[in-house]
Length: 232
Image 1 (tube, helix red, strand yellow):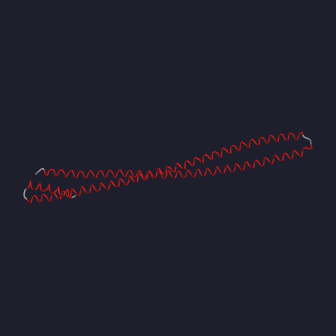
Image 2: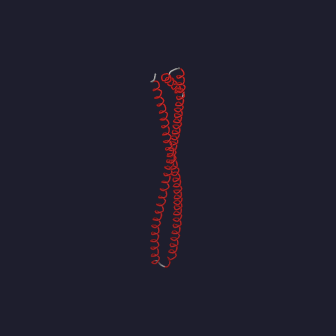
């Protein structure tokens, strides 16, 4: 730094002139002071540049932290959306199972009614005359046909609901897999953010150290120059 060189030269010249005396001593003192001032100036400049570079690196790491945190927020929002979808799937599965139970109860009731009807028909057949046998057989056949039709309908409905439940369970597992993947991604991002935070702290500390170093150089030079000028 030119300023330190000038101050050093002036301080050196002052010391040479007062302590030794004469033009030669003044010139030698000025040259020596200039050299010392130049060295100190270079040290201060180097320390300041290093501090600025470390500060820039710290700011870059802070930017990285911000970016990672924004990514984590995005991942969290994705997880929330998938969890909402997962809840809807689970609700549908629960509804399908409830429907299966209602169908089973309804089938049991219908079966009990039909059984009671068959029993009453048999009792009537026994009491009827032989000429009514044909009608009884016909009624029994109709009842069997009705039971078969109801059983087929029940089986179809139950099968369809079971298929829906199976598909829902598979979708639920797929969604959970997506959630686990996103959680893994979030953990990686958080780790990267933590590393960036550690680096930011390190660079900030380094910048503070270089700044203190520059301040120490300037303080030392100022003290030396002040002492030299005090000789005047």
